[in-house]
Length: 242
Image (cartoon, rainbow, N blue to C red; front, side, top):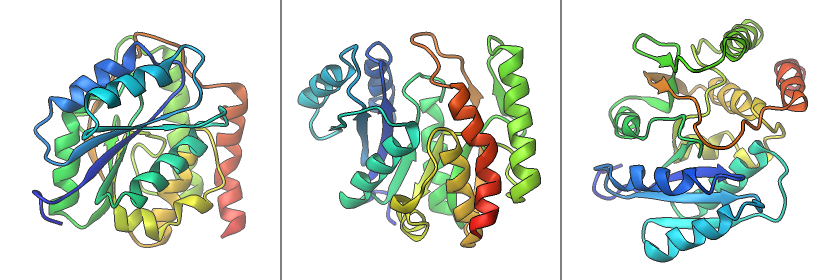
């Protein structure tokens, strides 16, 4: 996978992110990463995020693509659609990234370089390895929930990953094909756990690089009670399926 010939697609699901999306697109465009492209997966946002995405793509069609979905049926389904599209476009590396600016775009080059220079099949942008952190503005109950979720997931699935619930990841295309992304059943944030579990079960190494996780400044969190319940049940379902 040569650096000059690599195609890297950043998949970003959106729902009501019209203020954040242009900022994120600008941050990615400023990176010195050859072959980097942005794929926006919009779930018919009522605030017009899809229109904003179309304008960005019109201005830079070689760097930005848009996938419009007709309904909002969960983060996992949006990622499956976006990753499937990226692989169909012959991406060598696919990056998962939130649109809310909580994931630092400046770490993307490090994640890509780690994939290129090590045997890792996936690299996680991690809050919980040395050098990683979360913003001081992050509410205490969200910190506690995150810490508990990681302990809970690792206790059941033995992933040996510090930030098992993280959503900022860079994947080798071969890893994604091997774990059969279209067949993943989980939705919401448990999608991240199932992706990690499949990678570990198939023998791929997960690397982690430190990030500072920022609190969103615009819009609202998509974490609902339904999403939390699904996330709590998913590790047990994965064990049963195994």
